Length: 364
Image (tube, rainbow, N blue to C red; front, top):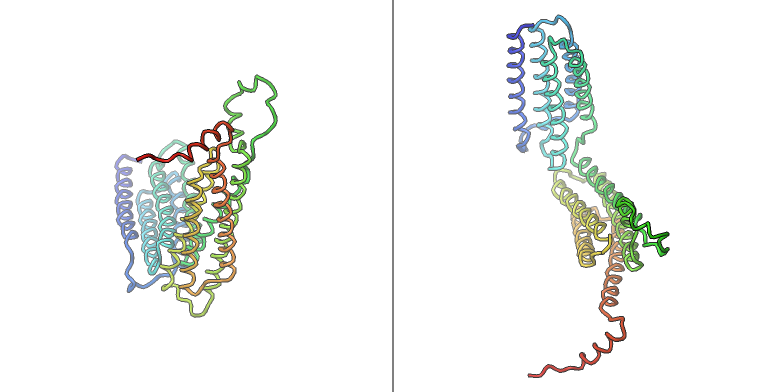
């Protein structure tokens, strides 16, 4: 294959990729409500066509004697299908909230990125005698298959997208909960020998989170209970929404904004759970723990108000919030008592000094 043929293929490829980049800019714009909403099922079907086109491209570009014209025709067909995929995906986002739109964009961007990598590999490998280079093409075809297959797992509605996002928040909270349960009090056993002081720093890393004082351990146990209750609240929130959307009078279009607010509140609670977990390692940060707990209380209260406005408030959610509030109050009291204890002098000589000072009067 001559240099001129390679230039033709590269020029064609650059042109198609430029057009796709321009179309991608459209996806960043919110479609007007007057635009006809397209089905995500159609997007999936176009994705299947793209997979077939990728297979054909892989076979042609790894062949020994394929005419450049045939390659150009295949390239044109592929990018026409890819263009259609982008436009249909855009049409499917009519009435979509930020969460669903973000899911759609991520899936489509993955298909585009894999397509670009495939075609760069195809053009580079065409006519080459480098066997390793040719072996890269089937691998790139595989990534396109995976990207197109992932379209089937992409949420097709706002409800599904928001529900999955809330579930992910709960999963992240469970990770924090698992780490919190691994916190341990410091060992009361004496060191085995003087050589222990010369151990590697890795030993200190292994003991990180295992040297809490009895007082700190009390706080850690109470905090663990709080996070456990928060996970329950999020689960009940998801159940409440699931029950609500099954009602005959439920209108997803009217509810999207409120559901997005609930998701944001979930994520904000998740951020406070992370903060709470980080504050438990010694030395514990009691003011930060108290603040995180206060924010959690306010955030869950706001969740309840939004659920009520959607007529989705349930008794199970209410009970979950009440149990959480009790757990939050317990840690507040423990921290308050701990602060009082810390403020009381324990040394008798110190008490001797403090008592007379309390009786001093400020002279004018």
